[in-house]
Image (tube, rainbow, N blue to C red; front, side, top):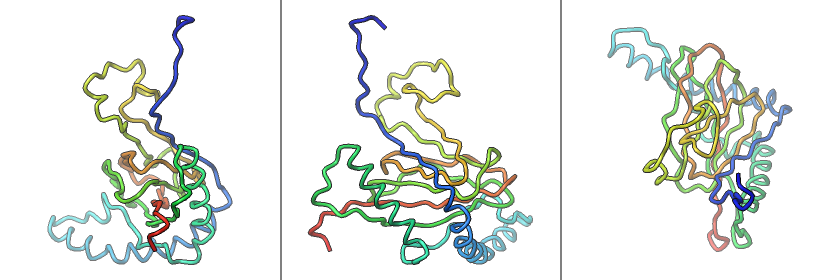
Length: 218
């Protein structure tokens, strides 16, 4: 760039990532029961689908989504960590939280289909300020998250990318290849999805949402 041309990045969308390996084993152990319970509940859906299509599809294309985990005391330490990091993240983003209480409003675990095809289309979570994941089972052979550009007007004047495989300011979407133990937290307005998983290896993660509520609300 020329000497008199300075760059400032404004309106950034931050994604915060950390590694907490010591939680992988204990949280997997706790989540095993929830995933097993969910798979049992999904058997009826699978049975009806097989009958309708007259073919043994099994859990193809499904995501085994647990019930809410907010009131399970086994997740107290995890929730405490999420809350503390959420306050740090919102503060770092520039928000004034003096008159707000920050807490998780959703928490669940999910595992993609053993037979492959598990995925999530692009979406956001309403009534939340932050969303995030903690990856329990994943590899370079499993699904991964993609984040979509929240700048809705950008598509009106897009240009070709120099390198489609490189995350840059010009991209309309960016991806992240997780490892077990990765903790990711990001603004809830950021649309995210999970690409199709082929069922080669297990893919399991905890998903959570965080809300900041005015202190006069009880």
